[in-house]
Image (cartoon, rainbow, N blue to C red):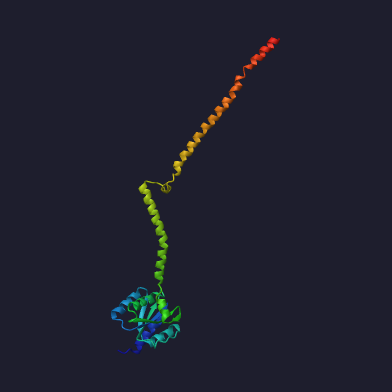
Length: 231
């Protein structure tokens, strides 16, 4: 069925709008995709806010020129050309097509070129970009790496709490076999109580040394008797 001029105008307007809003555009030669496979592809692209449009090469060239002022040569590419436009994540839409390229070994869909970060990329560069992890994947890995130390710390505290419960312990310090500060306090008081005993011994020694002086005291009356005899 021939495409009318109005239909061509509508397709061109749709392509131009999609190219203007896209963060990246990938072009792939689409050969023998079944209706079911094409439907599954479009559904997977919707999940990442991307689209895949098959159109005539002439219309794609005009739409790119109008939208981005970029000229491409698609004449040498075999079969129909599909344009995947990624609207949120520049890599996500390309990654979905890349999965299909790998699963069909390039027999049904094969990369041609792409426009990434405003620059035209050849086939090899397009394959490399499409194989990169998406932003969502990278964020998931980052969150996972951040949670690993926290989960390890949580496991440590859980294990410590379990040891406390099983051993009937009340404090973390008791896990190391160290006596708590409360038990150490009475020992210090015992030492303080022992100190007065030592002082008592010192006083006893001093008392014993002073005793001879008291025994010499009776010599005074003898001196008085001598004075009386002299008189």
